[in-house]
Image (cartoon, rainbow, N blue to C red; front, side, top):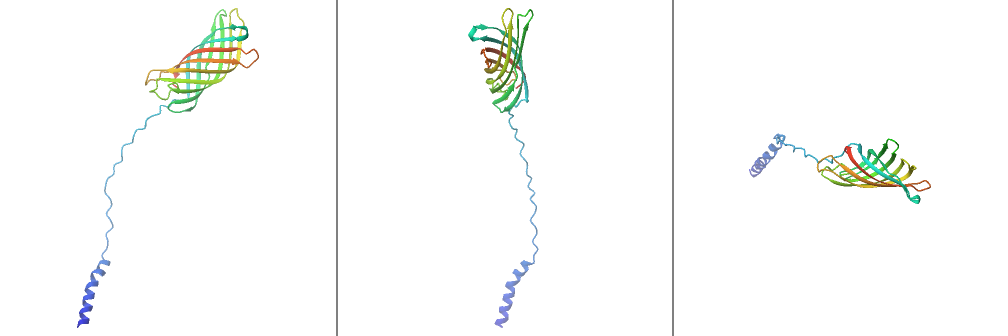
Length: 206
């Protein structure tokens, strides 16, 4: 009798476990939570300009021969196309060709200047940061200048050229103006030299 009771009790305890093994398990319900993507964050523009630019203005050169104390004057109109080599928000490295030509009838004066300059433009001179109102320019290169005045002999100077200047313009505007001072000397015997000043404005923003 006790043996039968023990068997019945054991079966009663095992039934729930066996039944649980045969109960089908429902798969998890899909997540119906709606996720909303955040609006894209506008990135600040670096204000980069085009690869090419043009400056224009007027220049005045004073070529001279130090040993003979002989000086000429050479005014002219300057057009300076340029190419950006490297740039970021606050600086630009450029290659420029500020060509100057001056002439007045009756041979009062005639002059041409052909330089090739590598310039480092900082601040507003770079033209990238529109909030910058002041900037600086330093550059070096090679140039050839020929000048003659009426009643005076001519001077030609082919050699090195360096320049430095300051730029200024209205804030938040593409208007940028430059004042440049330059110095050059001839590599040929005789060592002619030239100093110059130039005022230029940007026609196509740097």
